View 1 (cartoon, rainbow, N blue to C red):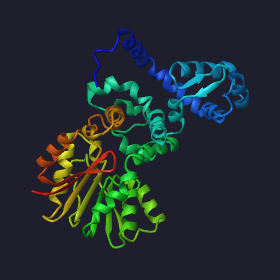
View 2 (cartoon, rainbow, N blue to C red):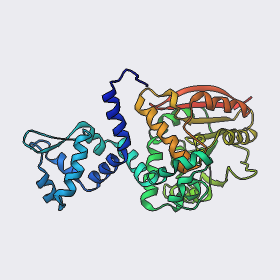
View 3 (cartoon, rainbow, N blue to C red):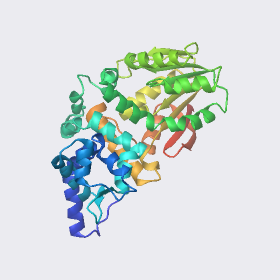
View 4 (tube, rainbow, N blue to C red):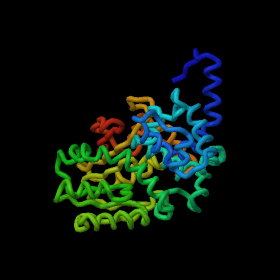
Length: 353
């Protein structure tokens, strides 16, 4: 929220923090990976720990640890007590041990950091110009199965962190009525399809995704012992004339549509609507930027939009609710239920008009 009454000296300080934000971020990454935060935290009940002791116990130079801790102290991540020992602040604690922050840092560092340098070029061209830092693909989805193990780990942990927690509540709502055959659009690693199959022993699931993702998803399905009721269907939604089969009574799209531009979303939803009968339901689960209770959640989503711009595809984002609802209506669907799901998500249950 804009605050035009802030003092000039405070505004200048904030501006300098933004100017050097990459320095602070990389210092934090280094302090985490080198074990400095963990070491300081170990001494939280012992009056903190000195620079020399940190360096000695971690077999690092006092110079190296010192320059990192100096910027961390100026950024209120660590503090030096009257004895000259370092202690971790609440902000430092969250940077080290909060699950959501941990997922966000790893995603930023391993997947996005180098690519973000090309953001201006991406804005000008409408193409994910930063993707070349990861591989030679037109969208990141083509290359997910080819990312390095660490990049895959960070990407999937980020993706799953913001969806897994709502699955149980979502499944309870989904199976409040009988479901015989569900299409899991954008199945990813197959987590939802597997959860569906275990939640309801009779339902059949078709996972719809790119070949690379389906190979990984089907391996997980077989490992979980539900391959008798889960089958793959390969599709490239950006191809000239994609189609899905008919026969599903439920089409599930969770955190999928934000991977596409609004014209592409309308195309996808229209294809889905054409495959539905009058009783079938299409269920959209998304995190809308304008339906967040907390500013930090909205901030995370808007930052994620820049990932889509520079790395994922160049033309999608995290949408406001009304933006997506308009596209749903344009695709020949009507929203019969619009309800919150968990802390951050919205579930839209749609039928053909």
